[in-house]
Image (cartoon, rainbow, N blue to C red; front, side, top):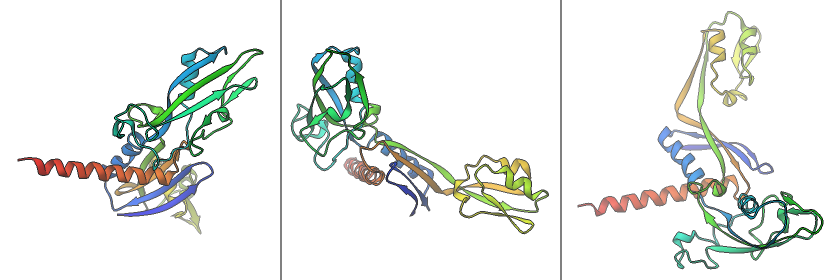
Length: 262
């Protein structure tokens, strides 16, 4: 197995990499574990002390719950795996407070007891207030998994097969170059060749094949191009590292269960 980083954009929380010498089962397992199993922090309970805004308590609580929160996986554990057995303690939950001060309530007004856990997007607008309206609340955040609720999903991840392109005797070279929406082909003299810089951008639309049957486009069964986008709670690398650890843990548990069979 080999991994090659193709692109890394930390500013926009995006990255892509090429996974080689693997198979579909493993690639899809990584994808599912990242989306469904990697835990992140999110607000689970909201207790309103005062809410005279235009939004009902339930709607406003839902907006707070969907706020991405920076997550520290080393300091917190899942409530179901905590020593307190989910009753609530400093290791599995975090208390946050908010008391509106102006005519607009932003995510940055959430005060956390842990400076590491804070809204990813502090300028996120939660509700507008008219004169005399107020919002005051206490919220409880905890770790959770995307399979239980989308608010705990760390981001988006998908993959495609690496394209394999062969160019034969082309009848109309210019039409082939123009047929590709991502510029996979280029002209070298009077011949068409594959632009290696844009090869991995190919999304297998088959437009080139439909233009001229001399072009052969196939999918590699052992090479996968992954695209990862984080919502901001964790970095792309942290998402993948956590997914690998979780998958390894599941395999170890499965192995031990197999050994217990008689």
